[in-house]
Image (cartoon, rainbow, N blue to C red):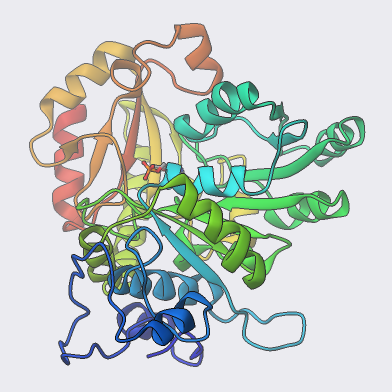
Amino acid sequence: MSGENNSFGFDTLCIHGGHSQESNRAHLTPIYASSTYTFDTAEQSIAVFKNEEKGYIYGRWGNPTITEAEEKIALLEAFGIKDADGNPLQLKAILHASGMAALTTMLLGNVKAGQKIITHYSLYGGTHELVEKVLPALGIGLVIVDFHDANKVEEALKSNPDIALMHIETPANPTLQCIDLEVISNLGKQYGLIVCVDNTFATPYLQQPFKYAVDYVMHSTTKFLNGHGTAIGGVLVGKDLQKMSTGMTKMHRLLGGNSNAFDAFVLTNGLRTFALRMDRHCSNASKVAEFLHAHPGVGLVNYLGLEGHPDHKVSLKQMKHPGAMLSFELKGGFDAGIKFINNLKLLTNAVSLGTCDTLVSHPASTTHLGVPRENRLQYGITDGLIRMSVGIENIEDILQDLNQAIG
Ligand SMILES: *Cc1c(COP(=O)(O)O)cnc(C)c1O
């Protein structure tokens, strides 16, 4: 099934989207483990190099196993969206070695020395470090404001005419903050910015940023899209097809953050059950949130589906479901966090998210161990905070393990 066919349902696209018949008629696109591609004649190579004939040249530039994953993800992000002329929206996706590689291609392909990026607090840790520590050394400045407050964003845009790009991550770790995509992306466009959204937590099943004034969506495909924790990967999706095929493709090829056939194969395979998995992830997460909310050993529960969450309303506006990520505070603080982790019998103690099994982590004793306490408290990472990516196990088993581990 080719990239143009947008008339199938979302679940069908997860399975068939991006697939084209391979010359040996293998049912699934094989793992093309080949660094380079051959030509029958000099004339054919000229045609492929001139882009007049479809073909592959060199593995860093493209690979058939990778193409299938790219086209599938582009179809899912565009699902049901119309372009300005009322036609089905066409997107182009470029698969990368990691979410960070996709982000780097996007940033370096759109911002140059002397310009600035505007973004908000509570970004993925790697994203925050990249824009705060690495890019300034290349002359790319950073403005961080609270994207919950459109007035503050506008003030910052007015006083920094050198801002070229806006990066939004919603929902974001660890408290599941949401940014209003419609309001903030429109503001970015009003000031002529390139707007990018990190859609890793929500996935295209729950949130489609291209419904709003957004130029790029990026994902860590490592998470829900792959779904099985079998590969690191990232994808950059763009709606300016010309720019995606020229500037962004060039940046991707030159920075060298290309994916590989094996990772693309397991990603494509994971995507076949993506919609089905998401339904279970989401229904389990709602039940886990309710359970934790009612538990006497648990204080605050950060889950977008709970009415008390400060961004509950925004999430209703732009997401189909509050998703499968949550965090909660154990009343006993740091020691309760340690005890909880050690008590677990079923749930997996690991960082990352979006895998079939439920993942839990205690940031204060792991990812944020080296961060001064006052600093992490500012980001909502309290002593007893537990982060949870709810998996697709039987809900009774998840709840039972939580219950016995909380004690
Ligand atoms: C994991 C993650 C990334 C980074 O992706 P990698 O695949 O680890 O490079 C970026 N953004 C978010 C929201 C993530 O969860």
